[in-house]
Length: 422
Ligand SMILES: C[S@@+](CC[C@H](N)C(=O)[O-])C[C@H]1O[C@@H](n2cnc3c(N)ncnc32)[C@H](O)[C@@H]1O
Image 1: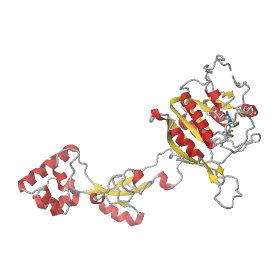
Image 2 (image 1 turned 180 degrees about the horizontal axis):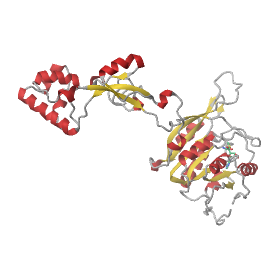
Image 3 (image 1 turned 30 degrees about the vertical axis):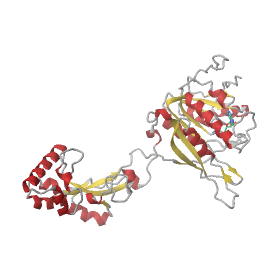
């Protein structure tokens, strides 16, 4: 592979096929060689602060202070921002350190600094390691997980590439798969089946409605699935049987208003009669947002009060039970932000390497078929190996010549890396 020219500002040619392009040298120096807006996804794990000596001059992680380390990670982040496409994503796995028995919160501090430097944090993923090392620690809990931060560029919110369908996890439980309950049940049918099938019901009594996102009580009927207490599963709610479209709603309200005027009763008096407060007024309003129809029970009472005829009785009072399913996606669920993945070991690498499923998940979700993956702290090259297997192009940066050998073996490469150009 050829470098365009040795000039400070020169950029490399991007890879044309899935053979990982290896850049050997310091991360910042190598990043500077990558053209603007060229990378779809970055997934990487830099050395953690004060943990392991990678035995090479210029390595990250050996800084005297945490502040210096954080600054370096932000500098790397800034350069990544330049090379990342506007629809690109950056996954940063970073571990913490204890200093004088005090957990330093380094990952969170790095993430926070990144946020103040033009990055938007989309997820704080917990990478739980079920095979974590047995710990000799006697006076605190063993560390069993590490953070993975998922960033996007601040200015390109909502435009980034994320293909959830590529990484869905198959449903396991019966509840997740969904049952075969009937879509609707009459009140009689429901009562017959209720105990037999242990059916749940959300009361659809408007008086109990407490508003969207206000709390997560079972009665929180109008809320989104996320705000309901029944987050996944099925239950029935009592609803109007007949659909009332806007035209019909308007017609009923005009009818009610005429009858009220005819009777000479104010909305305040109606409220008092029903022992409501500021409710009846909405039944007589013809503006779209301020109007609402009386509930079935209220209709019966209102009919008596205003001498209504029977023309709207059926549509205003008949109810049935409707199956409410927070339906799981047929192809599986969102993997969520707790990733249970065993750490991997490699014979020749004296550091923790990514389990292959980690870059796999990231690449499948965030790298389009023709995109380029970048790992700026490549180590043994797991990211490049996985990218190649998934048919994606990749660029790997690594400072330690000893590891370049491992990368080439793992990625089945016989090309020479681009070496340091300083
Ligand atoms: C934790 S390892 C990455 C392991 C990798 N995820 C894998 O699966 O093999 C971190 C790597 O960053 C490299 N590194 C340290 N300082 C660097 C620097 N300044 N520039 C480029 N690479 C550096 C180290 O040599 C090491 O291989």
